Structure formats: C-alpha cells, structure tokens
Length: 198
Image (cartoon, rainbow, N blue to C red; front, side):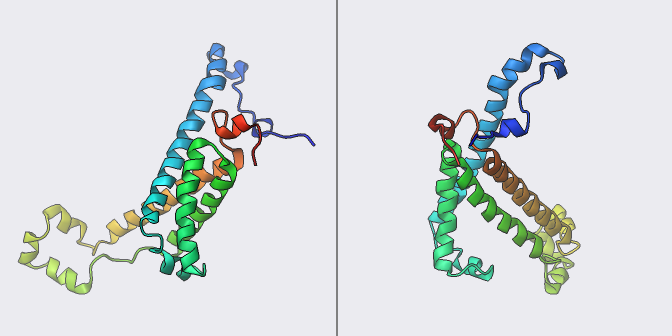
C-alpha cells in the first residue's frame, strides 16, 4: 500500500511559472512554508499547553461544567480535558504524534465552539436596579463617563462584543487544531524525523 502525503493531494510547492520572481520558489518550499507551518504549530501548542497548565492547577474545577454538557462522570472528564490540553499542547509544539493530539483538541475545542453558540451571554449586563442606579448622580463616582456610556443599554452591546469574540476565538483555535489533525506536524517536526506518523 502506498502512502499518500498531504502534498500529493494539495500542491503546496511553489510553481515557478506562477511566481513573479521564480527564483524564490526554492526559498518558499524549503524555508518560508515550513517556517510558517512550524510557527503556527508552536503558537497553537503553546496556547493549549498554557490552558492545560491552568486547568491542571485545579483539575476538578470543570467537573460540573462537563457534566452539564452531558459528559459523565465529571471527575473523569475534567482532568482529562486538562491533560489533553497540557500534554497535547506540548506534543503539538514538538510535532510529536501531532495528528492524534490535534484531533483530540479539535474535538474539545469544537465542543467549546458549540457551547458558545448555544449558550450566548445574557441580553444585558445590568439588572433593572443597576440601570436605575446608573441614572442617579451617585453613579458618577463609581463609573467613568465612557463606562456609563457603554452601560447605557445595560451592557448589551458590550456583551454582544464579548460573545462575538468568544465564538471567533473558539472557531480560530478549533480550525487551527483541525489543520494539524488533517495535515500533521510538517517538515520541521519530530513526526517527520520518526518517518512514521498517524
């Protein structure tokens, strides 16, 4: 059985005929593309490892949350999430077993994306009582003018921005992990040196 590489499916080599400066083809193929792929891999892995480290400091913190999503028992899934982030992030940075770790993180981040889509932040930041307080002269000693202006709608615009950023961030990191799950660690990875990969 022959192995089909991602480069056989998608031509990633710089076609000299299409380049304005054909002499750059070798630079693109041997340095620029592997460098960019590795730089993104390092960034993705570092963010995942950092998030995993934060979760490892309190591995049961997400037990209730994962159970609310239907993942029982929480005492198993909460530390598993931390381990997938931490160990997976380190392995993705190294390019070691990149595809399985990236796939596990893609699934986990996909659940996060789904969660943000179906559980948006509330419509307002302030309660009716908070809105009444905002209209009083005393509010000026607690809020800046710009802050009061942002809260004039109860914080709805602010929460809309936060919701949009949560979805965008989840989509970006899910997509980035998905790329490594599909294409592997690349030319500058431990997987490439092992000459075997998933």
